[in-house]
Each structure stands twice: as structure tokens, then as C-alpha cells.
Amino acid sequence: MSITKKMGMYIGLFLIVLSFLTYVSRDSNNYILISNNREDINIFNNNKERISMYKISNGEVERQKLSSYLNGFIAINVEDTRYLVRVKEKESPNKIFYLEKNENPLDFFFKYFPKEDLTRNSIFLNSLTITFFLYNLKLLYVFKKEILKKKELIFAIVLLAIKVLLTNSKIFSNIYLTRVNLLITVTLGLYLLLFVKNKITQLREDLFAQIFFKILFGMYILGEVIMNSCILNPKILNYLASNYPIFLKISTFMYIWIDSIIIILVGLFLESIKRKKKRIIKEIEKKNLAMLGSFILLSLCVEIFVSDNEYFYYLNMFEFVFVFWYIFLTDINTMGRAKVLTIKVFQMFLHVYLFFVITENVWIALGIVFSFSILNLYTYFITGTLRVNKPYIENLLNRMYLTKNYKEFKEQLSNELKKNLELIDVETKILISRDDYKKFLVDREYDEDEILLEKSDILNQKYDYALRLKYSKNPFVGLILIENRETKLVYEEKRYLEDISEQLSLVANRYRFERLQEELN
Image 1 (cartoon, rainbow, N blue to C red):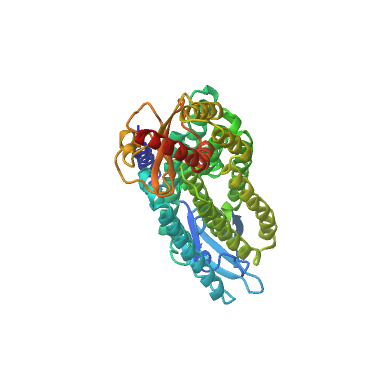
Image 2 (cartoon, rainbow, N blue to C red):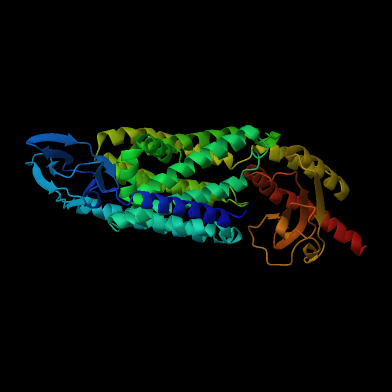
């Protein structure tokens, strides 16, 4: 089943559950919503605002429990009577509001007036959001050729762009757009999760892994369906809290701690462990495991900020962008040094935001010191996953340079690649004429950076990959046709083939020249 059909199925499930819960909770009106525009103006709460609510009945005052809800609070299962709302701020008299609750839900809103000039903060956050959005557009331009080949990711890119914009409360600052932001987040997360699930092949035959992920996925779907229903309709939240509090607590736990990003990272982590370690990538896999492990820890740390809405929204946005580009970059064949630097630029954006937070909160500052150390290790881990150890390349090339003729070159190259990458078959073709490639590949224009071609470009469907050998202005000196085993080559193996192609082209061009001379003679 395609990703689109699966998405339609899960969205249909959500709408059915939402409709059912909306119906059964239609008379659940015994709640009070309290909200203001503080988070839209000042995410750091410089006034040190504290809100509390008290029930006034028969001359007695009883404190009521308030739970966080979107940009404010909600009091669940309250009686129809008078209530007192107290807003306490530093160095200011308490503000007192009296509310009268009747049979209808009560939605109380009051305005926030900051005691400091927050223009500088607003300019910074607006500039950061716009610059980060433009940076992602730049990434799309840099990878436009690769993206057009992977059209299934275009939908995710559109959602990601909208999420970046909606995260900024200075630009989009009402409760309805907050709900839209959360719905886009869950849609994007589910789409990426289904995309990665299709890419993970090593775990399909592992029964324990399959059961584990089905349980994890079921918990994820349950948490998202129930809690997003509560977000869209507070009556549902009040109904479940009043009648099924344990079920609501379990759903809340699943919603917070078992999200799509966690499942994606755990899946990639286990896939990396399960993958058969070929000689050439054993050391690379260790670094890849360390990187994915650190991603998982960072993602869990982000959930700690879930109660501080604006911190959470920004960190969650950065988290989604980082994971999306990690999935994308490790799924494409070509990765130049300039493209790798885009990940480092992303780290810069994250650090800029986090250091901005440092200036406002000491505890956040301590967390940033830790995250700074972790994120700077990413550079080591990521570059490690993008680079094959030189001895493997040098040993292969030395043997190729020492070959005496074309036949020996073909046999040696086939043996070396089969040994290093555990391939079924390797066939090397030296192309005499510029148009000889049409005998083996689809006749189309091939870009300069298209070195490793996939099955869709190969005429003989026996082969899974074709490594292009080019020399000087000749785009096709030769081709290396590769038949792989059941699973696809992993990114590191593709990188290895790309690294050796330039040097192999020198040897191939030598034998091409010799064959030209033979034909002339």
C-alpha cells in the first residue's frame, strides 16, 4: 500500500474517533478555559506571571487545579458557581478577576501587558524565523535535482515549510493557528514515519522487531488520535478527564514520549545494528550508531520542555527540520562537501536560538552547555558516516594501476568489489564511442554529478546500479554494472563507489586508448 493510501486510512481513523468523541462529549460543559496573549508577546515570561484559580462557595475559598492547555490553562470538572482568578506578577499588586460559571463552558481571556520593552526580542525571533525559512528554501534549491527524483518527499517539504512559519508566535499568534501547527506536526511526523518504514529493510524478517514496532506504532497512533481530539475540542478533554482519567493519563504519556521522531530514530538505530557489517563500513557504522543514539537522547530532552510551550514549539521545529534533512541526505546518492556543510549551518541556527534563551533563564543555560557539546559531536559523527576509510580505496586503486591489460583490469575490479561490497556480479564496460552508453543506459541527459545511477536508468534490469566513469570532457569513458543482493546499497557503500570512480576513470581511459589503437591497427 502506498504512503498516500496509508495516510488517508489513518486520517479517516482520526476523523471517525474525533466524531465519536465529539458526540459523546457534547454535554460535557463543566470546565473553564483561562488564556491570555502572554506567549504571543513574551515567551520568557519576564513578569514572572503566575495564575491560580479558587472556587468561592458558602463563604469558603477552595483552590482549583489548573492544567496547561495550548496557550493557557483549563480547569476540569468544575461546579457551576463563582470563581476567583488571581494573576501574580513580580513587584506588582495581584490582579483579581471574578468569574461566574453557569451550565455553559466558560472561556476567560485577559490581556498581558509586559513591563519591559520587548522590541529587541520580537525583532530577533522574527528575523530568526524568516532567515531559517529562507535557509530551508536554499537547501531545496541546492538539492532540487535530487528532490525531483524523490517526489514522495515534496508533500513533506511543503508541510515542513508551513511548520517553520507557524512556529513563530510573533507572526501567527492565535489559538486556531496553534491548533493548525499541531495538526501539521502530527501529519508531517506520520508521513515521515511511513516513509522511513518503507526504507527500513533489515528489520522486515526480524519477528521480534516487527512486534516491537507494531506495539510502538499502535501506542503512537492511540496517543496522537486521542490527544489531538482533545486539542481540537476541549469538551473531549473534559469528558475523558472526568470519566476516564487513567485512560487519559496513559494517552498523554504516549503522546509526549512516543512520538514519530522517536520511532523514526529508534528504527534507524536498530536498522544500523541489524545491518550486516561488511568489511568496508564496520568503523563507519559505529559512528552512525553514536550519532543516531545522540539524536534519540536529544529528542527525549526536547520533550522536557513540553510544558513551556514556546520553547517546545521552537525546539520541536528544529528537531523536525534536522531529522527530515538527515533522512533525505542519507537517502540520496551524491553528497559533496558543500552539501555536508548545510548540516553545520543548521547547527548554527539552533545554537543561535538556544543562546538567546540563555540570556533569559539560568536553567536553560545549563541545558545549552550540554547540548552545545552534544551537537558539536554531530560534526564528527556525520562526517564519519560520509567518509570511507582511505586504505580500502587506496588498496583497490593500487591493484587497478598494476593491471597489465583490459581483461585483467575487469577481473581484478570485479573480484575487489565483490569482496568489499559482497555483490553478486560486477561487469565493466569500456566505451569506445561517446554514444556507446546508449547500449546500456536510458538515452537522456546525465548531469555532471550523476555518478552512481540506479536501476531505472539501466536497460538490462539484471543490474541494480551503474557506476559512471568519466575522464576530462568525455562523460562516458566506461561503465561498471553492479548486481547487488536483495537489500540496496547503504549510503556509505554508494559513497565508496563514488570516491573510487574518478581514479578508476584514469585506468579505464588508458585501456580505452589501447583499444582504440588496436582498432586503428
